[in-house]
Image 1 (cartoon, rainbow, N blue to C red):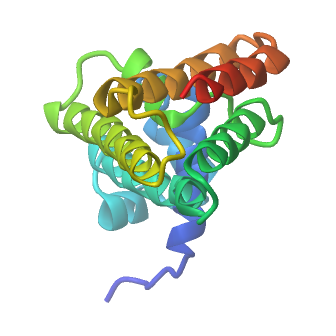
Image 2 (spheres, rainbow, N blue to C red):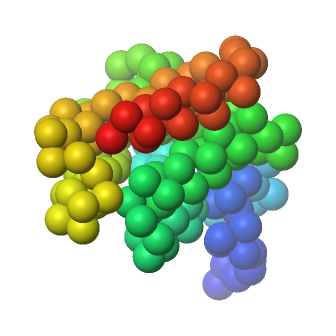
Amino acid sequence: MGRNISFNKEHALNKAMYLFWEKGYDATYISELIETMGISRSTLYDSFGDKDALFKIVLEHYKNYRYRKRNLLFSGINAKESLKSFFYKHIEECYSDDIPKSCIITNSSLLIGHIDPSIEEILLEYFNELEKVFKQVIDEGQRKGEISQEADPELVAYSLLSLNHSISLMSRYKKEENLAYKLVDKTIGDL
């Protein structure tokens, strides 16, 4: 009978998430994952599968990690203030030295070479989900009279999605953080 090696799966996933986030899918090797996660090769494969399977699990784990920020969009304050809270938190996290730059979704969509189409599907699903949430906030803001009726909710939602990932990308290259805040203020102020 084989030994039962106990480990904290959540802790190991966090470590894998940060490694993929920092290095990208293509530049992350199984040997690095094993070392970073503090598990054996057999535990990695038994618990998470191969690199593709682990990456899919990590992307889902990341989505859960990011939901706490997304909850700011439904904070009960008016739509513009909710959007501003979300984007300010996003900027704060993107420019933080405590976590990898940008966002694993943005990084992955830019850095992944030829991969399993199901991973691309997960990335696209993330984009679509966030865009849908932005549209809900815009629709609700228009319903309450907080956002101009002239605003096209689909166009605004797409614009906010683009802004979100633009901030992520710019933070990787240390572009001016204060300009990101000003852009958010201008974009939301124009609604």
